[in-house]
Image (tube, rainbow, N blue to C red):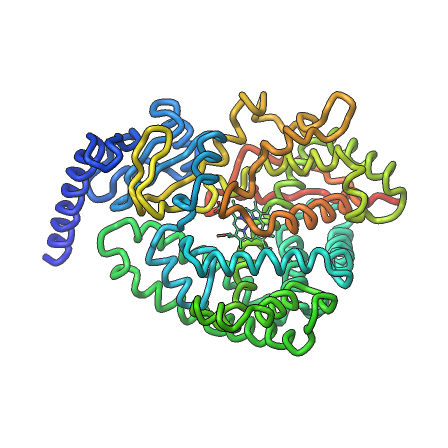
Length: 501
Ligand code: HEM
């Protein structure tokens, strides 16, 4: 009986929304413009049942019919999908109207449980402030003369290479080994741990990542349905419980940095930089924004959440693609040998290894890891390319659609790093700028620079020490992907053959 009533109310809400949509699409808004076109859906669930597990591909097909901007109904939520570079840039570089995040129950709970998170927060003054601090902390870390990035990469490479060598050239699925090394890099750099001591902090943080992904995967579906937060109440409780120990550990680790860090030259890691940024923020600014030092310190959770799985998955994409392209691998390794001789690749070498940099760009393009970027939301009624987009509309930027657009990237299904080189073998800066794995505009990824440095060094150093080969009985299929929040690379055994120097 109750279920039947819920269905009836759901249908009623849907009917009202459809009438409202019809009214707005026919000029019933202050701009007198129609809303973007798009396919019809079913009552209550909208177009959700037709999206499938690879939404980016479904959207590419819909764009062929409806154009670069169209809208689909996800349950009770209206989603506008942007499918080309021009439209994505035009929207996200516009004023702040596209800088929001959807006001989902899942995101609200996340913000509340972590006491502060700017990634999930809409584009308000607190988001702006915390984002600025995060960028400041990252750049303080990058430019500090005590920065430990290269030292940490040394340790992570050593651990990774030792573990891969232990397989003695036998096929192995390196997922866990890579996971541990990358957790070590970001954990050490964020929280200033000793690399060898990383597990104390990282175990709960890594399990938190899984908890958050699961929570958002369920949350985004249930958010779209009427009474979603009621149906979600058990997940909310479990999530809150899972967050508590993590919040305590992070707080303790960063508080320890307050004692050490008094000025910019003291900065050894990002925790130091965040602690210092918190101290340097004038009290009246904190009061105005309703922030405390505790809240500011939780920027570290945003950075861990944003920077761990994305970097790990990009690295795994890189080794799968390199294993499947021995010619690319040989050329990249030759360049490294010419430029570095027998010293390990350093950040300062990056400007002299255009082919390796092109490989990284092509890994970003081919993988298009965060296919639809993170969802944005309109913060006010706005317009785009002659369409009206009401306040509170969810916006997806289909980065995959752009990265596979043959107009920009001819033969997009092929892994061809030299598409980013000029005729005389230099990196083509204009073409490089067309690759946008970190999004564009006001909410563009804050960890971009760090991610590029980390991946460039770890991939280059791996190539300096190992030949990566396919397992002949189980070859890599780089067109097969694991659906999820990110477009994950397939897990597959590979052979790491040590190069004798
Ligand atoms: C290959 C690695 C990475 C990829 C592909 C990636 C991609 C992205 C994308 C697509 C967004 C959404 C942009 C938008 O909403 O328009 C984003 C946001 C974000 N990323 Fe990354 N990211 C990577 C690494 C990192 C790293 C290493 C960090 C931290 C050190 C980081 C921290 C963040 C944060 C905090 C946000 C939220 C920004 C905001 O809401 O204002 N990411 N990233």
